[in-house]
Image 1 (tube, rainbow, N blue to C red):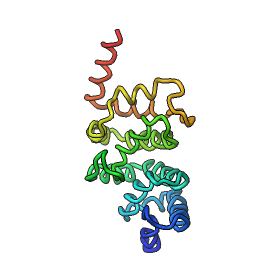
Image 2: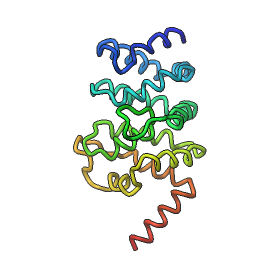
Image 3: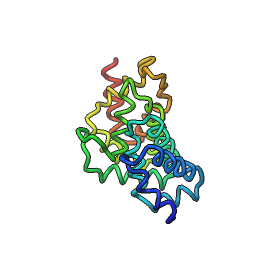
Image 4: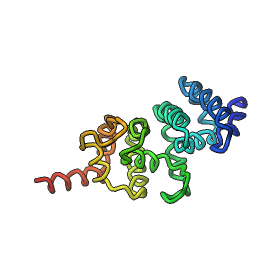
Length: 195
């Protein structure tokens, strides 16, 4: 664990690109095993740095961070840790860098030019899978300022994303969130309006 902790300074967004890339590749490799993911859960600072790197100006760095977050969010413990970081975030949508993963995922999904839209759908699909997280995610989602209709529009519009993202995993996100009373009421309202 100490060797992983030593990578933290290199995962800072201001680190040299080559050092950041090597450190991130190592962390991404660690997320490929259950033991590695468990080790990373003991280092919340690295989890937070991965969320911040999702916004890196270098697309390869942002993509690798998204892949690590997909792996981490695939386990319930990892999803919980990432959700806790998002809930404790003091960042707002106006901040240059946010550590609110839920906000960042929704923001990338509705951005027609985002190359991270598909990975963000996968992250949200993973995090929303445990029913006990669904209500908490809806609360965070509503704080993003992104309307459910905007999110639904991105899912139902053909070729919504100009970078080729298909947003296939957004369907499971809606399905997972429909486990909550709040989302069920929203869906019923939508159905009544469409009649």
